Amino acid sequence: MSTLIKRCAQAGSFESGDVLVHVAPSPEKLAIYIKSKVGPRFSSSMQESVRAVAAELGVTAASLEVVDSGALDFVLRARVATALRRAIE
Amino acid sequence: MTYMSNRLRRSMLFVPGNNPALIIDAPVFTPDSIILDLEDAVAVDQKDAARELVVSALKTLDFGVCEVCVRINGRHTPFFAADVSALVPVKPHALRLAMVESAEDVACLDELLGRCEADAGLPVGTVKIMASIETAKGVMNASTIALSSPRLVAMSFGAEDFTNSIQSERTPGGHELLYARTAVVLAARAAGIDPIDTVFTLVEDDAAFKADVRAAKQLGFAGKSCVHPRQIALAHEVFLPTPEELSKAERVLAAYTEALERGAGVVAVEGRMVDGPIVARAQRVVDIANASKSLREVRAR
Image (tube, one colour):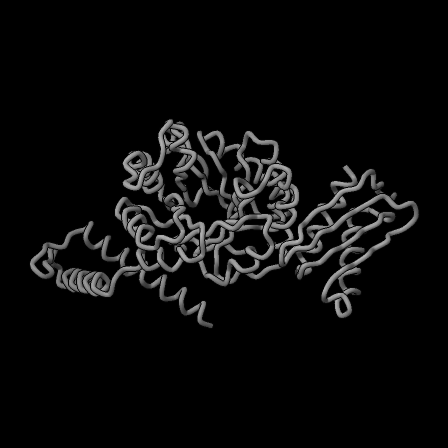
């Protein structure tokens, strides 16, 4: 069963090495928008990480906007998880 | 993470738990211990984000030979249980519990750790505890706190909250802290765990920091909590035996060993009688020097 996104929420920051993740309800599917200086090279792996965290939390429908300031993968995953949990609770 | 008994804790670097860049950089400065902080360094509305980030970091990053601890929020805060249950599966070496005031505070953490370890399929006792003494009540109960759990490996002193609790303020001389620092050292040493001294917040005053570390060492502390990477090498320098101290300690141990082989009960080195306490002190100096040396060799690889 899919976990419902109840509200808009965000986590992270624009600080170097961090990432800001904004979550909003979306009616149908996961929509992921990534803004990153390394986007051309790493966008697909970042998308993969976002989808993996969403799947762990049972989220199948949400809009996620990711503004990257050079975050490593473990940071991205943590911020996505926090933003989604905040949007779920 | 494997727990190493008798490790050095000369420097314990505080790292804000919600700052990715500082977490990533921390092992580069090679403190003996890293303390990922979920307590004072994190705003109340960011506690969940910091906890998630620290858990993700512990799952992913290689902290090298550094001991990795997490300072969790106090037992009476709404974050305590969530901190513990989230952290245990990723096995930090230890949790540092803030604002410990009684043996019951540690026993409560011990019990919760046991349940979380069982849930995670870990052996009970995997995650150690460090108790942070930061109030007048904590100081008065230090001796029972130090004996409150077999998981306890260190007891630290926090001067900022302590001076608030006695309605005083910190001064450069630190006289207001003398009793409390000594009480923490005696309680920890009597229990066989490491006493760790409070932070020194004037981060650009190296000379004053070194003087503070020297005073801590003289009182019997095993290490210093640090708030800036530049303090790490300075703390190591103070806690490391000088070449003269090491040479003398080695001469004492050699003379004592030779006396034992000859069947002599007492021996003199450089005109001074050497007995049990002096041999023990010499052995400690050599042990610290050896531990520092092996740590340097591991880091140089």
